[in-house]
Image (tube, each protein chain N blue to C red):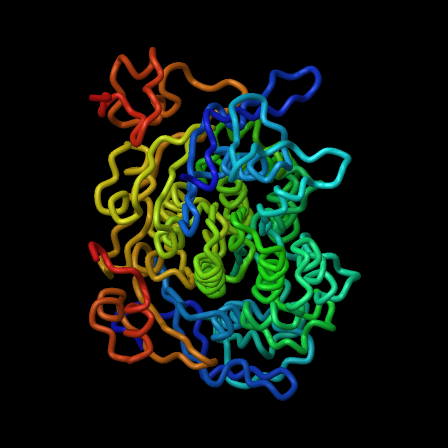
Length: 264
Length: 304
């Protein structure tokens, strides 16, 4: 485990997942700590997205699992009944997906989408939830939050939509945020803003963030700790500087060498 | 002699009751045979509209598009002019650009027929894009996104284009398939002697495959140059901002620079230089007069 002393809020321990004949994850260990961004890198098919989904207890139908995904109160998500899992999702652990164009509902106002689970999880009244929604939109830096709350997803640009998806994820004050390629669909200039936002939220709110990305540049910019995955296994875990500057595993070195170099 | 010469192209989208939107507002660009040109810019800058106009899918409002010995005329009700089938396009979304109800082999055969090619088989084309020939009998849904885009590339190449256009051909693909498909497009185009106009918002991929880069902002090309030069020494403040926004994998934990503000509404572009409201180096002249087009269209670099 990583060097910092703070206890984990969510830890994945010896997680194995198989679907039919295929072993998707073959023993994954990852610990998420408050105020830290843990980056998960790897090519597609390496199991990084599956690890992110498992951390939410969102595994495909018919998946067989062993190992544990444990919250700080000791509950193992893999053994939790559906009812309890629904209480954990959105409230304790929230998720942001790659493509905000498909993860937001096109026919509901964004206010409705932000307040829906706040009213369910936190039991807030309509007016209270709306006020909190406006506050959240301001927090993710949507201009004119009081008017924006009544608009629909198509009225926003891609970057703004991803900020809205982040506001929805934060609505119930989760401890853990899982972000799966959150900036892959965005322009670089917009990506820069969203990365700054994620880093700021992690620092200010003490969120534990699991950032799944194939982009080692993104990883280097925001992650504190980095794990590199291949074929369902974590090959290397360590502080960002160590993994990206002095990688131990040959595969990590190969990934870094595959990138175009500065000045060459 | 350039294969494609776009000169002062203007494309407007008109909607009744609204001001015309100038998606392309006087853009000039050339592509030579065997050359790969990367057209980059943020979403909404007009790069896809430019590509569609070059292909004849959208009518130009002004300016000219010269291709080989003739001019590109917009597609109408009649069959596309044979000289224009030498321009082929690979679209963004292979889930939408392939017909889900026809076997992929039959769709590739359409391209072969366009080129009156009776020798090559659809299976042979599949092998060129790295898929087994026996898959020609399958339907699009049996393939992954990256494989489908390879099929779309095979279909475009079957028509023996001398100009291949990729309109964000990799942005709908899984991250790790992106570089592979982009490199494949480059290699196949260059091998066949065709020019490639590759449109993407992903600068790191464009850097990997393009010989020359053109940077577009709000309907205009603001800077063009050889890829290595632009990467090492970007001159236009917009190009500089784009490159600064790319996070570097140096392990230092430096957050990339944000470019403040949004791309302005093309229906109501700013006066003078279109980039001046977001430009960190803006001077008085920038708000008043538009800089002349050139390798760098910016008042910091007045034409000699």
